[in-house]
Length: 216
DNA sequence: TCGTCCTCTAAAAGGATCTT
DNA sequence: AAGATCCTTTTAGAGGACGA
Image 1 (cartoon, rainbow, N blue to C red):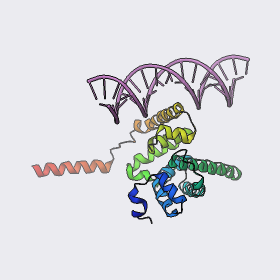
Image 2: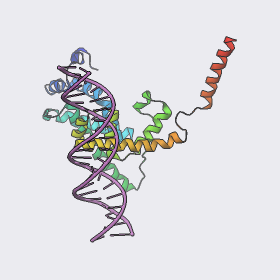
Image 3: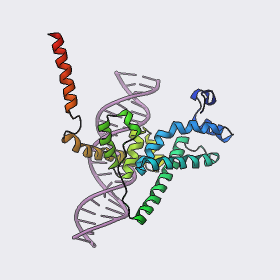
Image 4: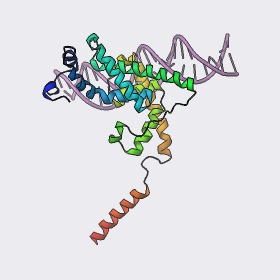
């Protein structure tokens, strides 16, 4: 575990931390991993769609990045460099898995499992619906959507990592949103979103009735 | 070969936010 | 308040893939 003292109250930039790691302070790598874990997990999930495998890929990417740290030339930010390594590793993993799947003639499970970091932030039902909708997006749109909207990465960072032009990033994001709107409309048109269920109905009714009874 | 669909790129308009 | 900057959205055109 890293102490606050060890990382100078989080005031060091990623690039400075990298330099210190390269100079022997390897324990500082934990700080970088903790900082980027969530981002890398989400991006990896957007490619792989499997939590366990995303974990494995992240581990491999972290190890690869660590091994290459002394070769990091600071041409881009550390986060961009690390994300690029993760994407490469994820795509490689996907490729291997596809090959394996074809050999075994097995079906790929495209559904997200139920435990995801987004859970804490969202209503459970809405989260499932959104995840399902996001998972239906073609990979290239899903990646841009996750990076821009969920990870709040800049257009510049996204285009740099994905090796795309600026307008292409924008159009892909816009199309991803269009697809999501269309996908989600199925749910809200069938009243699955904001469903006023029996339990909630009872709760509201009971609350109001209690209030009325007290007033009278 | 031709038509259709999809993707990418570029440009422009308009809105939101930041800076002076 | 005005201008600058960034972002989103829309539109048009070019080019590739694919089926008839």
